[in-house]
Picture 1 (spheres, rainbow, N blue to C red):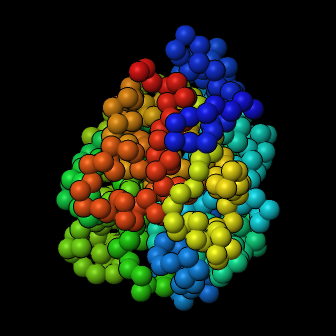
Picture 2: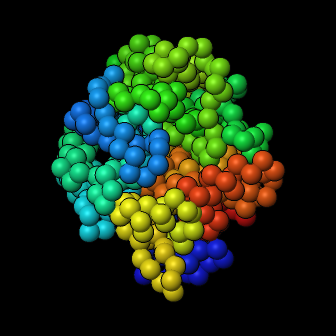
Length: 446
């Protein structure tokens, strides 16, 4: 594979599977772009991947913190939606209730890349799909299982039995969804949910309050609704040790009650984005339920527009970037944690194969980043989209920490981003590296 050297990043490796011809992306799927699709089918399935009591929780505390689960408030889910249009183009969307999920564990065990391959291999008898046509997004609940190995016992990583369980059960759910495809109509919607998000520090006043919605409706009504929103699921604080999806649980139960169908939460770009301490009312699980219900209300009230396009397209690449953040370096060198594959070169350490991708599903576009980018990055990418439904997905296909653009760092007079976010991820090279990788995909005009 060719490597392209970039400013602020060691190298980008381009996988030239999608080709840009005359400025237009090819339709990557089974249909070869021979004709415009006129219909689409979808299927949905889910699996309970709740780990055993005593499993380490992710999201709070220092590396090796070992915050262990003592109970289960609501099931930890992996959810799968499969879409296929009548030209054979397909897209698989997976969400799971975890703090994050590493793309590649190296010699430690199977990672997210293995999960995508497992799904693609299993589904080839049902739909024409490649591993890169599978999006796996973590909700980033801070009361879910640690799937990155940052909060495990020192010198350990995520238990191999659980990593394999997640792959097996998610693949089975994908097979179930693909084997039960039904004709659907797609409806998109957009709403604003102001007052429920704030920036830390304050590092900036800029937040993305948008709620993006894509609903698949079959003959029997709603089949599944995708909801994209940017906010940390941290209503349950560090003293909570019950497994829960946090406010995503509240969203799902409110949507299920109203539509009779499941909802899948897709996390937005959340660098230094949390909810105000006094919003919504309540504490603990009541607060999680209230925030989830507020998000569900916004999604349900968003005016729906029927899709006129059923095209599915994909473009992707991977990026390798230097790690400068103090926390991951400390965890890697001193604690033997963070089993994510890295390599050393010229006395520096690099994380390899961070996945960056763009997808189109009918009236919706998805810009997918492998960590927690800034709202500035998300809003900038939305401006470049031509589709009416504009999804920006963080913690997609990897969980490499905070990804900060240079402009956001320069504007922060509080020191918040310098003091915390830059240390909890790749550091300064991370944001420019993923943005340049996104630029390389060619899905928008400069």
